[in-house]
Amino acid sequence: MPHLPLRYRVVGEDDYMLEIDVGRDACFVVNSGDHTSHEPRRGTLTPSQGSKLNGLLAQLGEPRDHPAPEGASGFMAILTLGEGGRTRVFRFWEGALAEDPGLEAVVRALEVL
Image (tube, rainbow, N blue to C red; front, side, top):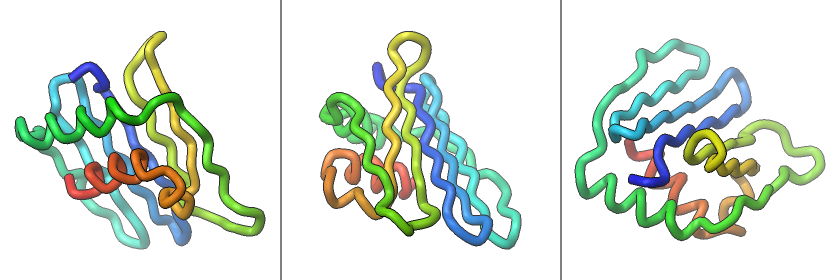
């Protein structure tokens, strides 16, 4: 999977956060939290999950920022693909995902892990 590793991180409101790391070996860790603490979930992408995610990542193109509108707070996200000199970083407000269907598809695929 040439687009891995990846990290998806969202900081919301009221101590909400979501962080998903997928390694080159297709193993993933999902950390989420709010007012209570949650143990990290771990697993490995199935071949079909890996294939689907890799196909979605291949369609992303170059990173574009999708900033939050003035007055919006929380739910800022960063999706980091690759490592070293091949890293691509997408910064966006989650409310702007409808403006970028490819990025939205990647986020939705990650959220079901």
